[in-house]
Structure formats: C-alpha cells, structure tokens
Length: 276
Ligand SMILES: [Zn+2]
Ligand SMILES: [Zn+2]
Image 1 (tube, rainbow, N blue to C red):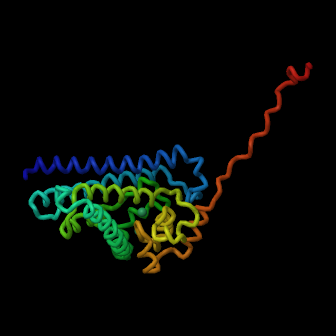
Image 2: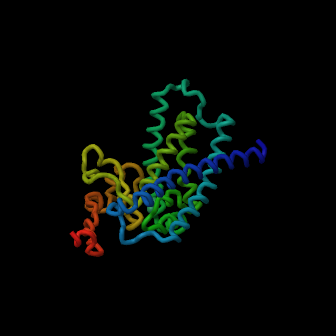
Image 3: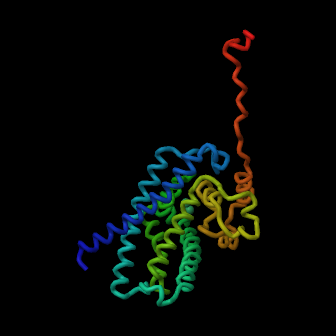
C-alpha cells in the first residue's frame, strides 16, 4: 500500500464524514432553527441563553478537526480489512439479512455502553480539562456541536468501530447504517429544541430512550445525564439529573404562545361610508 493510495482513501473518508455532518446538522439547523424557529420558539430548552456566533464557529471548527481523526481510523479499518485482519465481510448472503440487522442493533447497544463509560472517564478531574472541556464549551449546544471534540476525545469517540470489527462480523452497509443512526441521534441530542411529547420520559413505551433535554442538561450542568441513546445506564448508576423529568415536562408541556389577533384597522379617513 503506497502513501498516495492511503492519502486518497483518507480524503474519501474525510469527505464522506464531512458531508454526513453538514447534511444532518445542517438540515436540523435549517429546518428547526431557521424555517420553524419562530413557530417552535416555545420548545427551546434554554431560551435565556441563545448561543453566540463564536459558539457556532467553535463547534464547527472542532467538528471538522474531529473528522481528521475519524478519517485516519476509517483508513485503518479499511486497510486492516484489506489485509484480512478484521471480520468485515462483503457479501450479505454470507450471514443473511437477520444477522445484518442484528449486527446493527448490537453495535448500537454496545456503543451506548461504550459511550456512557468513556464519557464518565472523561469527566474524571485529571483528564477532563484536556480531553472533554472543548465539548463542554457549548453550555447551550447547537446541532453543530455533534462532533465538537478535542482530538484526544475524538480518538476515544472513534474507538467503537475499530474495536467491534475485530470481535464480530460486520458488513460495510451495517457500519454505514450504524454511523448514520449515531449521527442522527447525536444531532438530536444537541438540537437545543425538545421535540418529544410531554410524558415521553415516563411512558412505559419510551422511558428508556433519551431526549434532547437530557443531553442539553448535561451541557448545562456537566455532572449528570452522561448517556447517549438510552437512559438505562444513567438510571442504573443514578446519574440522571434529579430534576430531569420535571425539566423535560416543563419544556415539552409548553404551549405555543400566539400573538393576539391584530385589531381591525380603522379606516384612515371617513371615506365612502361617511358619504352614504
Ligand atoms: Zn454533547
Ligand atoms: Zn460530558
């Protein structure tokens, strides 16, 4: 494998990661923040602290830097697979579609656990400032914060795929689906707006899933709500913010305040009516 081919693979992976980020974070920003912004104003989780221009720049700058690390990891997986070292397989028929679906779900579940514990580690005082403070510079995050990591945190965040490809068979399509799901939920966690309905965190059907409020509170208070997709680990380790459910209901239950109907415009002059 020569250097030029490696550089080309890196450029391809970097471009895919950047496009994925710009499309998903960009759509969330465009649709929720811009197009529906005023109609959804009552769903803003922290209306008292709108992010400033410098926050957006910080989030985008570090996200683009993160993809340099993710790109290197992508090339590592690609080359390791070419050498036959990983369990990545090319033909879905080899293990069938049920296994394909199972492998995506398994990766999501493992990533949730991996994320929770590596996240707890990065909140450990000796490493917090170096590894994780960059991400916490956004105390009211925007969708652009989804990959706003210090390079050392980016290495940790990229870690799940290079681990699992050596443990169980994964199809490239399953990796792509997982990566898409991860990015979508990551953008949702940093959305800044709560779109789930009131009662979501207490319903027996949905209580296990996290919300935008959940991760937004992590950015606001730092020492709570460490989970990514699901609420299991925060419940088990009692790390949900003590007011998480109340805070969620407060936002999700807000009614849209519509401006009172404008008073009918009085005729500027007596006009024709006065002449009748
Ligand atoms: Zn975050
Ligand atoms: Zn954190």
